[in-house]
Length: 207
Image (tube, rainbow, N blue to C red; front, top):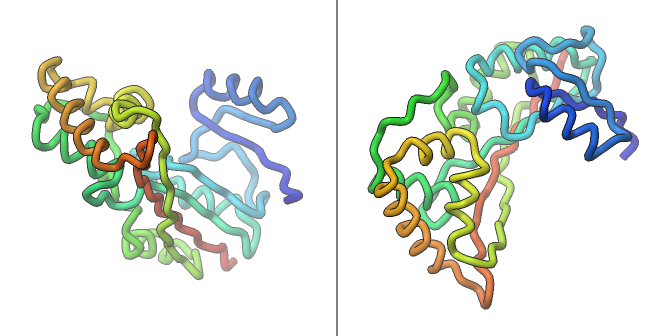
């Protein structure tokens, strides 16, 4: 599409992995809440599934606004508010029903705060963003066995992984079985199709 992207992550290991995976793209280590870029230097700032993990997401939004040119867009994705029969709804419900509330997690906004269009507008519009909008984007994970959903959250998420890893072994086994039973209801032929919708928001720099 003609874009010249620069990738940023606070983890040096992730930056090195990104450089090896995409050697033609520039990557740098940095903090989304303190971007190492000049004012008005980008046409767009995008963040994939990161806002809900930042201790001060408002700072990240302010920084996005600072580095955007006039008319530039800030867009970010988060997981949509969980519903029964969807990926997050299945796993979080199983944790709530069968788990022990003992996970000590670092500071972050409520998990699904930015899936709420009103919350997004309440944060972005006072800063100076205009034409703020939020849309739910359907997504489906296609798994070949009913344990893959639990494994994805147990090994590849952030806060959900911390919640699962903190569980006693017996509770985690019970959670796994509860998730497996739900996923089996989503069988389509030899596969299991699991809805995992995302919420995507965008706002534009008016200055």
